[in-house]
Length: 328
Picture 1 (cartoon, rainbow, N blue to C red):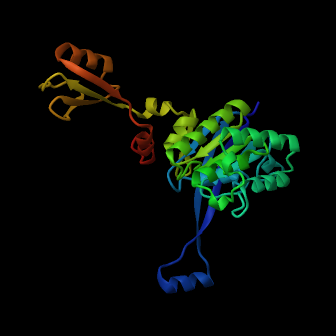
Picture 2: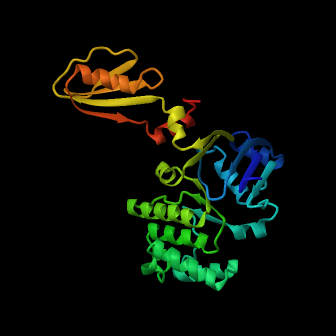
Picture 3: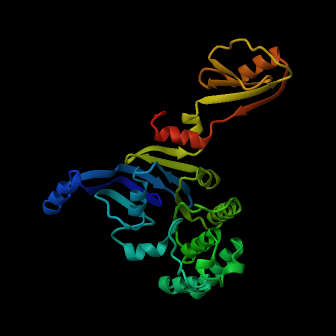
């Protein structure tokens, strides 16, 4: 049985204008245009089950936006296959869009000069949402996102956080089976971000909506997704559990120790020792070379220690290393 979302050997190539420098080059290109091919997506394959929340990330130019546009039916692939909820997005677009929602952090589908509620009513008509379904979704989402105070306010008067909440509801009123989030919390304050993330988690739990996130904010990914797909230069470079990133690539560990008094530390094999101040020392090591429990036992047995703290590598720093090719 195939998965809810099935992507097999997906490819997309663009023709990019190529011309010589300067005015002569520009004029020559106007007469005889020259192009070169750029392969944005190269044989990407993955599957996503119904109700999964997946982070889909990569550096700028990696091919993630092109892939999402093919998944949403905006672009047609050059090769490979896509199936989402039984639909082929680019072949059955009119029917397919009734089953998906899209939230763009930098673009709004709301009418700028209309009150929020009027934009919702307009979307109700466009999607032909049954009255009972519309009322149920509207009331539930407005309560979950605490939106009642600004429903009658024109969109142009909303704060960025309020507009993002309204945009998310707009994308969900027709009860889509899958929703694509593109930078859903960009520019939103800390409280607003947490409100949106809590809503997304609750909605996924209650309605089993499949969600795919593209974002540069790793907090969005860490607080909503269990799985991460990373692409770079058109290729998939990681597909697995979010915490698996640490297990696979986070080989460096850090032990910060505060001693009772200024202490001279003897050399320890395979451990880099960095003094932070008179009593604080940092021990840096590779987890395949040094067992952390043995290191801690050694320190506790030989020195007077006031405090000890183990630091895991930050997910964001590991992702950056993957982008830079440092850990592949």
